[in-house]
Image (cartoon, rainbow, N blue to C red; front, side, top):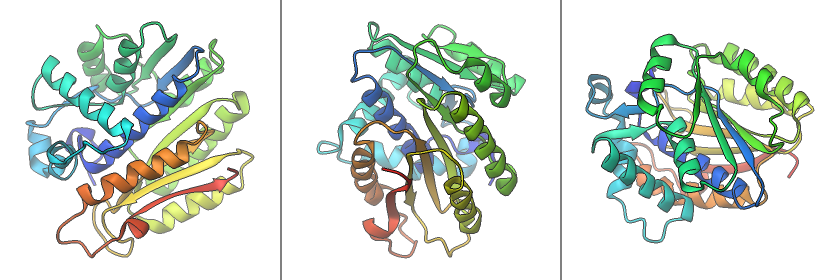
Length: 291
């Protein structure tokens, strides 16, 4: 895989990640108390699906384009909210735009002006930070040229006491990155054990993922939920077999909502020439630790 995100914007993994993010934000917003949201790997904020990178891979066809063609009348609420958000972004910017995680956070803040939600995004790479700052500077989200490993420790615990840290790193060296991210999660959890942490990860090397799970189970972090959606079986070598998200301290009943979301999305993202995957084998929401 090429980890420059412009190649993958709007693919099935991006869509799943952002719908689960919408579900987390909606549930955190149900309590009449302020909360803080940080996207620790902000990226560019907005991506063009007509760009050379996006057209080269064509990955959005199996993701956002497939979902926007699907019948979502009976979809879970988070999927409907997500679809409406896409329509708003395309009306505001361009019909070929795909909004990244910082936009979804800012969109939630805009929709809830009295909700006491404070959003921020970090981006360490200078060119990506410049693009993020330029594209989203008018939206209600703080944007910082900052590295997540240093930055998260500096902003937690937030003054709001409640909140979500989203981590969506590029995974350029999978085994090494998994270990570094576990260390980052443990350090953050030890400083702010009440926080909710959501870590996106690719499913393409099942041995690396299983080792990642084993290491997580050995930590002192309680209430670890894993959400997986596969479009190819794990024994087939492709660029990306599936997408996963680890949530530490998810809101109450988030697991049930995530299960419903993934089961709805699975047939939409089904690959025509892939071996048949049933909803039971393609989607998996389970507790690694606690419940």
